[in-house]
Image 1 (cartoon, rainbow, N blue to C red):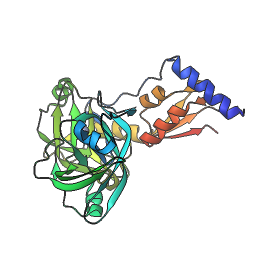
Image 2 (cartoon, helix red, strand yellow):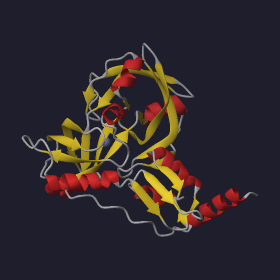
Image 3 (cartoon, rainbow, N blue to C red):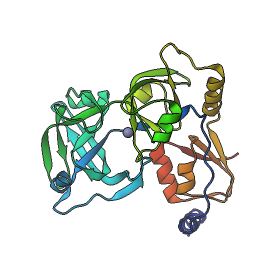
Amino acid sequence: MNQQLIDRIVGEILEKLNLPVASATTLPTNAFPIAVSARHIHLSQEHVETLFGKGYELTKKVDLSQPNQFAANETVVIAGPKGSIERVRVLGPARALTQAEVSFTDAFKLGVKAPIRESGDIAGSAPFTIIGPNGSLNLEEGLIIAQAHIHMEPKDAARLNVSDNEFVNVEVDGTRPVTFRKVKIRVSDRYRLEMHIDTDEANAGFIGQGAIGRIIRPGEETSPVDAKEEIREILVNKQYLFKKKLLSRDDLRDIEETEIIIEKGTIVTALAYDVARELGKSISVRQ
Ligand SMILES: [Zn+2]
């Protein structure tokens, strides 16, 4: 056995022992993290069985930031009159309605005119085809471009002075600063504070995982200086120096920075590498 393999096995064992995790960085009080949603699909249990087989149940690949939501191991092909997209990730658990959330670029590739909608609001949305290993479905509706939104708990809504279903403007600082308009506030006990945008929106603003946004009020075109400085500091400080002996999947989830620097002897578990890839984070050894 080579050393790398031994380290990996040791890492997996240590991960099972549930070692303490690194503490997460805190955000300015008026800011929130932004997560970029890649194209994905939610399926009803009936459609899960049509696509994957009778009695089939989705299997969890990785937990998502919103409580009880997960990315499944399963993927499907989605298709329209002009093209298809392979390996579209299924998110679980199964829902009442089947719905695919794609970017404008994806919809163009498929050759459909998808409307911008809030998740769950699919009446009259675009038709599309789903192909699974065991069968396919031609749906009359269900393909949408997700409306940018911010999930939050009631306590966050109180702090940010917003209410459920309200639309706000959000400023994101960075290399190519952008302001999003018509961002929907969604408040529920079941949510965790996080803004969701799609890949087109993220690409427009050079927004990667770990970016943060801030609500701006009409007339308040730029941030107050102090808040802006604080945001800039976090964006510039994108590197996280990890000093412990073992970098586990849980540590990785708690680190908000996109570049993780480890010491020479630090062991990284295979699961941590998987999650890093999933979240678009890099892990490199300190020189
Ligand atoms: Zn969302």
